Length: 201
Image 1 (cartoon, one colour):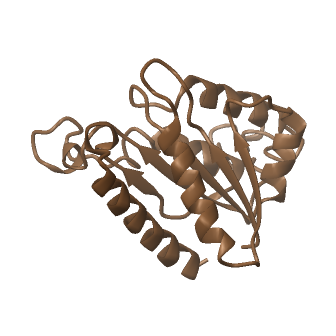
Image 2: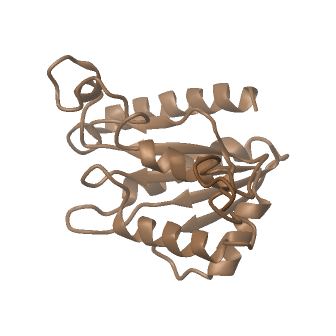
Image 3: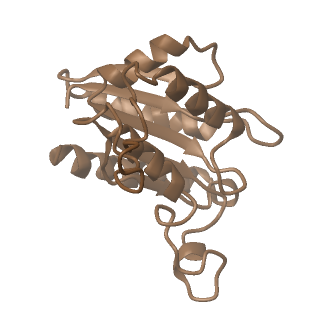
């Protein structure tokens, strides 16, 4: 795990300024910078994007780290556009070659045509929803986790390319709970997660 590609999916829109995801990216770089063995490349989806350059970052990376807020239970619109455009550019060009099926037996092997095997990815998300909305009986997400619920499709997207998931991290109650005291707790918990995750990579 030497080459790390960090994607900041934060976006300015309505009352969202994208500042928290920039902060999380900064924490990630702070953690990685303690070890000189890591090469780091970054992308912010709000910036001007060269599609081929982005494809080459995915191919270059050993680990892709996604930082994204969740809007209306999905990734922001510019981040979705980024994925659509970059992955399409990566067709037969480093990211995937096909859906994996053959015309001889089209019922099997869907999702096995990725070209990014040997690479891993990690997802962080930030939510207004508290963690208890996902865990308590009778609450909104019906005891379904972020990864098995709202982000299920995101994980399948990465599996389609051949990448392997490592445990991600989800920040909850970011809008109402983002007090200075809680930001310190967010950072401490996230840094502990990175420490444990990178120890096993």
